[in-house]
Amino acid sequence: MQLTDCSDAVHALASGSACGKAILLGEHAVVYGQPAIAVPIVDVRAQARVWAGSPGTGPAVYAADLAARFTPESDDQRGTGLVLAAQAAIDAFMGQGPPLIDLEIELRSLVPMARGMGSSAATSAAIVRAIAAHAHLSLDPAVLSRLVYLAEMHYHGNPSGVDNTVVAFERPVWFTRGSAPVFMPVGVSLHLLLADTGVPSRTRDTVAQVRAWRERDAATVDGLTAAIGALVCQAREHLDQGDLAGLGQAMSANHALLRLLGVSTPALDTLVEAASAAGALGAKLCGGGGGGCAVVLCPSGRADAISAALRRAGAQKLYETTIATA
Ligand code: MEV
Image (tube, rainbow, N blue to C red; front, top):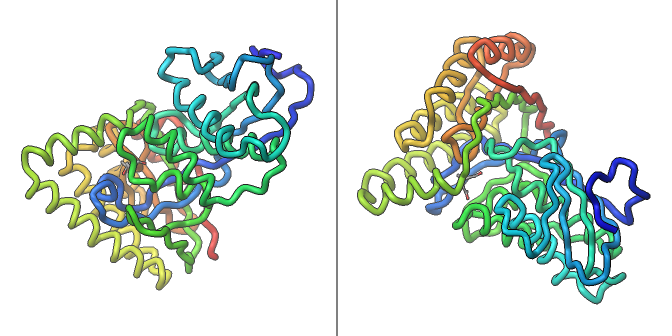
């Protein structure tokens, strides 16, 4: 079968879902070997369903939110990474279950695209999980993370690996490029708001912008990324000790350094300032910057007031989530 809209299609053979993410501290610096702390946003998810496709069609992905169908032959850039994730899963799982070659995959996602919330990793992970479920495989998160990384390379050029890791494991993570991820116990619940500027931004572009600056002036960029790394280390201690005020201060200081790194925008700065003025413990841009979302740490009982302030300051959409203690 070929999907155009699955709403009244016959039951799928299998399905999978994956969550979005927020980086609490350390984006961009993590590309250059500094640590980052990322958390899963488990209630904002992408969902993939698998059907048997027509013989000879290869994997096809129908992205319902875009009303577009992508195949290995499509030259539409929006779908290349999705088909790549499907193909990577098919190659990895081939021979371990029912025939996997010609699959029709439907994708729907609540993770906003190009907003720093891990949409590319979430959609790829949902596709890989659905194909693994179709092959009756119990999927090791480390394998999932590796497969999603292949698609992330397509989207981001030189990804650190933090997004695929947090999305695949769905656990708060201390991530350093090239090292095994460390899953962090969170000693205190984190009440987060993600405030969307409504401006899409490609991580690939802001990462390339920082890289270009570093090629001209390594000393300055390395100084900024080292300072971010130091804040990430402080934040880990605050998290260990359940010190929310200290964590929030480190997040806001991280935003100031990201501004100096040139990846914030006036709209992001306005949201961060509005959140702080309304009583947030800390706020910063989240992910690649250049648009997208701010992540805000709220003291208990203040989320409604901070949400209202963020709306007045221009937030187009708000996501509220709690990272539970573990
Ligand atoms: C994107 O979510 C985080 C960045 O640090 C890029 C990366 O780590 O690959 C901006």
